[in-house]
Each structure stands twice: as structure tokens, then as C-alpha cells.
Image (cartoon, helix red, strand yellow):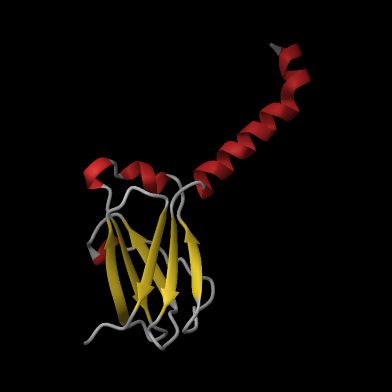
Length: 121
């Protein structure tokens, strides 16, 4: 066993790194298209509709209008819900923390195109 590890340690390390990257970045992509006529400063994604379970802000920088940004979700979010229960909830907030729009995605694909418009208060 020691001889095997001594010869194959590089391949084992590469495999572990690849697996880690796949688990972190191999999930779903949410393409956020800003049609709200104001910057989107925060996007939260969750597998629960409860606002208390919002995930972290997925944006590093605001999305100006009319631009778009891809948000890559980790693979573990795909494993949490399967089949008909697989629903992702997304919320967009302006720079004052006010809700711009919210949506639910129930598809089984790896890409969700979300065109954000301002909802009426």
C-alpha cells in the first residue's frame, strides 16, 4: 500500500481536487437578467420559500440595468431536492435592501434564466 501511494500520490491529489471543484461548482446556473431599471445589489437562492432560510448574497458586485450575470450554485443544492420536490426560490434586492422581485424555478435542467423586472409595491 505504501508503495502504491508513493507512486500514485499525484494522481490521487488531482482526483481529490477535481472532485472538490465538481462538488462546489458543478451545480445549477442561474442567469439573472436585470430589466428592473435599477441595480440589483443582492440575489439570494434557497431551496425553501421561507425568507428566514435565504442563502447568502450570491453577488460580488451589483448588476446594473440592463445587464446580466451568471450565478453558479454548488452541486450540493441539487442533491437536497430531487424529482417533483426540486424547487429553487430566488430573490433580488436593490441597494437599499428592498425586494425587487422573487421567483420559483421548478425545472430539472442545469440553467435557469431569470428576467428580473420590478414588481409593483
